Image (cartoon, rainbow, N blue to C red; front, top):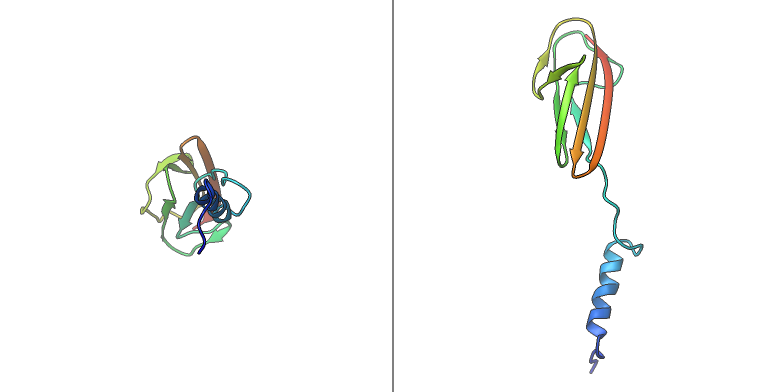
Length: 102
């Protein structure tokens, strides 16, 4: 019958934890991911588009042609647009920009 030695169970847990992390130690924090739906970079659209923005964690701010933009709004005026989204989670920052035309 197998019996752990003194400290043996803790060693097994440490090995299991290292394996769960890929064996290379703790995973470095990653910046939030920004997901933009409704338009793509370089896209040309014949009519109105509804743009939704999501981040996997934290908070974000979006601007369309330099003006504050709220996710879920529809853009319908013909022209060139630039959407800029900045997301923050803790001390980590992510930014995504894309241009499109109607």
